[in-house]
Length: 169
Image (tube, rainbow, N blue to C red; front, side, top):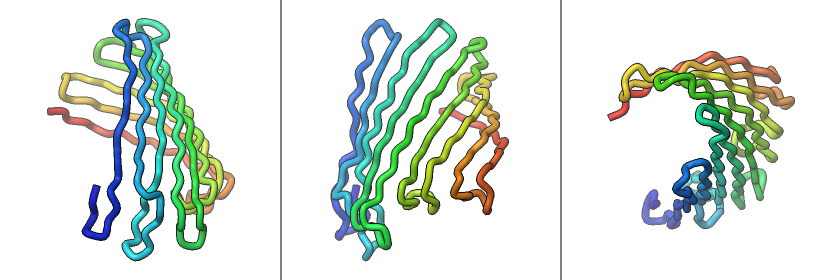
């Protein structure tokens, strides 16, 4: 990836393991560049390592877990900045057109470089995916976020109700 002539090359790639039985899979992805914050361009060049595991617990229930670690050097006012996240998803396939998912996530923005507030973010989200047509997905959700650093307009907690509509082609 090149932003301009002064940019550094960046590799984005992954490797996936998915046996034929389809019960489990793993994917490991990376973003590798120089890992330095470019102050002249105000551009973040992170190094990121991401592992996603999926396991089909039954015909209707699937667990997905994800672990992510990233870092950048020479961040103004911070120096070395790093962060990590762990996410667990449980998805229940109600029928061909409806699934329900609960997500539990922990994200530690250790120096506050990614979000502006240092500390551990914890999140619980529950939502549905309704597919009335194969090309139309409707996804409502309710989310509870927490961080003792009070990043949510001076509050430590935030409750969000949202939905999106995806049109696939």
